[in-house]
Structure formats: C-alpha cells, structure tokens
Image 1 (cartoon, rainbow over the protein chains, first blue to last red):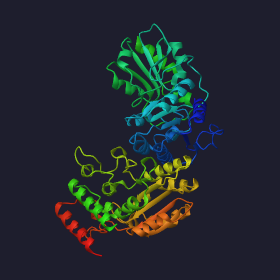
Image 2 (cartoon, each protein chain N blue to C red; image 1 turned 90 degrees about the vertical axis):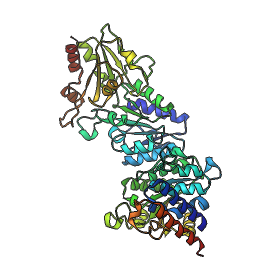
Image 3 (cartoon, one colour; image 1 turned 180 degrees about the horizontal axis):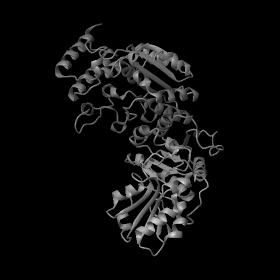
Image 4 (cartoon, rainbow over the protein chains, first blue to last red; image 1 turned 120 degrees about the horizontal axis):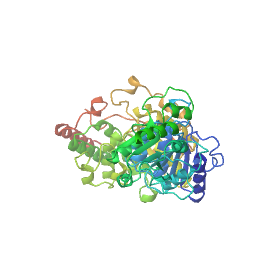
Length: 290
Length: 263
C-alpha cells in the first residue's frame, strides 16, 4: 500500500505544482526519487511543526500531504491537527503508516489502535483505512479531490491486491458473496484474514475503506440477519462503534481489547492472542450464527 | 500616529467593557506594534498580494480587532459584536470571521509553525509578499516555537519577521520567576536569526527594525509594558484577567484623552 500511494502522489505531483509533501523523517526508500523536488521536505523529527507548517502551505493554496508513521500523524500532534487543519477547514491529507499493530513487536509507542477514536472527534476529518493497494490509491484520489481534511491509515507494503475491478471507496465493496443471511464488514488491512475465515464459515464479506462516507447503512444492512465487524483497532471506539451509532440493528464487533499491549510478538501472534485472527473470528461467527 | 494608537486603545477599552472580557493588559501591550504594522508596514492595497499578519498571541485579539477597525477593514458593528451572544468575533481569532484575520489561533505556539509554512509557500511561488507574526514572550516556552525557529533559517526565509511582545508578565507571573526564556536574543541568534531588540512602544524604532536589511528570518524583540497607556493597568498582573467595568473604562479613557493633549 505504502509504495502504491507514494507512486500515485509522485505521479500527481508532476501534473500539479501546488502539491507538496512533508515527510516527518519516515519512509526509508519511499521518497528517494522525490526528495530533491521543490515539492518535498523532510524537516526532521518535529510533528507539531510538520502540521503547522503544512497548514501554512495549505493556507497559501498548496495541496499538502503529511506522511509519517501513524502514531506521529494523529496522536502526537493531535491539537495541531484539530486547531490548524480541521478548525481552519484546510484540505490537508494526513497519511499514517503502520496502522493497528502492523509494527508489532515494536511496542505500544508504535502501535495505533486508538487513532480512529481520536480522528473521529474532529467533525470534518474524513477517515480512510484501505485494505489493499487498490483501495489505498483510490482513497488518496478521493482525498486529493476533496475540500475537506483527510486521514488515510495504511499498513505497510506488499499487501495482496484483492480488487480486480474499479471500486468506489465511499461504499462497502463485496469481497465474497454468499447465500448466507449474515455479513462480515471489514475495515482496513485485517482483510488478509478473509481466506482463513472462509475456510470455517460461509458469510458475505465486504470491505469499507472510508469510515466517514455518507452512506445509508440501515438500508444496506436491512436484508442481513447477523452483522459482524472486524478491525485491527480497539474494539471500543473504532469502525464497529461508529456503525453501532448509525444503525439500530445489533452489531457484533471484533477488535483488539481496549488495553495497553505488553505482550511481545509479531502481528500474526498478537492477532491470535487477541482472537482477531481468521480462525478465531471464523469459529466465533460459526458459534454465534447457530 | 499618536492619534491612531490612542483610538485603538480607546476601542480596546470600549469592546472590553461591552463584553466584560479579560486580557485588556495583553491587548494594550501590543497596540503600538499593531498600529505601526497596519499603518506603516503592511502592503494591503491588493488583497491577493497582501502582506500577511498572524496574531499568534491571539488572547490579544481585541487589539487586532480595534486596529482592523481603525484601518477601515472591520466595521464598527462587527467590532462591537466581539464576545457577544450571537456576535461576530470570538475572544481568540477565527479566520472565517473576516478576510484580514489570517489564522484561527488562541493556543500558544501555533503561529510560528504556520507562518513558516506560509513564508516557504511564498518563496516557492516566487512571491514578494512578506509574513509577520506577533508572539507573546511567555509563548516562547512552547516547544513548537523552537521547532519552527530551527527550520525557518534553514529555509532562508528572509520574508518572515517575528515580533515578541516582551512585557515580562504572563498569565500567573513573571517569566523570570516561572520559566525564564532569557537570554532570548542570544537564543534566536544561536538559531541563526537576525535579532533586533527595541522599545516596542516606539513607532520609529519598530519601523526601522522592520526595514533593517537581512537575508535571514528576523526576530524583533519588543520591550513593552503590559497595560501600556493606562497608568493603573501598567505592569500589573491582575489586568491579564480583570474586567473593564464602566468605572474602569471612564477612568482609563480620561487618561488616554489627556495623553493626547500632551505634546
């Protein structure tokens, strides 16, 4: 996802001289062929400055992209994002890499499992969690045209492409259609658990890249009996919570337990530990559907 | 200029009294800097090519509102809607309220990072426009100020001028007793800024400092007196918060009018 988005940004930059990228001393190799451009700066390790500086460029008419590891995009400079970008209604694009527990076992300082909760407090900030490189590029294209601020949280690089056809990021995208009366809604890179889930249970599965899309969820979910959500984020405060607020139908949420992670291990290990891996989720859905 | 700054101070007292809002001392402290900028420095004739002024110490917003009114850029009605229910202007600035209010501010340490981005954008656009920022002295305790202070000289932003309203009275005391920023001039010099230190109530000194040529970003440290122009408010901490009642207003206005007669 990371390289796909960066390549798209570099492509757009050639056509749009107002585009400007601020990389907060992150992204080894990603910007090597762009770092000498006048449209790029790496001002070092200073997240408050990055956001304020970007807001200044944006006020002068530039389309500004701020790229950093996700904890340093929303959490560290939260009040600068709130006051300088969102309150001032600037269409900046914030891109955070290493969403969820991608960087496990780096430790909690490098996880972002509560960023959707924080981002959701800013009423005009659009939030995207693309699942694959195709969704990531389409989310960027949407944000690039938008007049609102955007936050795109991506995992890392090398994710499998799951979409072969053209997609619309403002709507749920079917990954698997079934005769089942149940549906599982995925938000973000957890989509790579799908094959393991389908080995255990046959269920409709959709990916939702844009959390804040103005979409009629009640009408969409009306035909389904049981609705499940799965995300690599705290179970309370993420996509599932947002959906619960928007529909009357019962939503069964799968996510990380709201607690600080002291357990050491890679992403797959921690997904299993917190039972959001495909096998655990498939078995739970099976049990709950009976 | 004396007439202009007196009018600005009178209107600050006027709206502080209408609103019964705090921060009168902070607004009076920077009135001379704002008057000089708006009447002698900023190029505002063509809106699209105007110079930019950012009030980073936005708790002094009354001074900006009164100055914009004096300059004819803010109506009396809008100025008097300051701090009122259903009014026009908040206690700290909102850029959507007036086309000459460049940023929404109020939380300290935001103005300089934004100004650095603006100045860099103008360089990229080969524009001759300048960016001016007014910070409080206590504001220099914010870490984000020093993040921007490191970057601006590296980007060679000679189109950026910053004023520090050094009245040595912040919210709850003197910086020297809380967390001293001194020697503030040496610190910015070490960060490779052009640093000047002047009397922040002297119009000629302010203008001269602005016009001093340099190829670096410029820091003008203005020695000021909080509450300047009203003797019983001068250098008194309480006027960071105390309200301008009818009685206070009458006493202060009398002093300001009498000062106009002094030559």
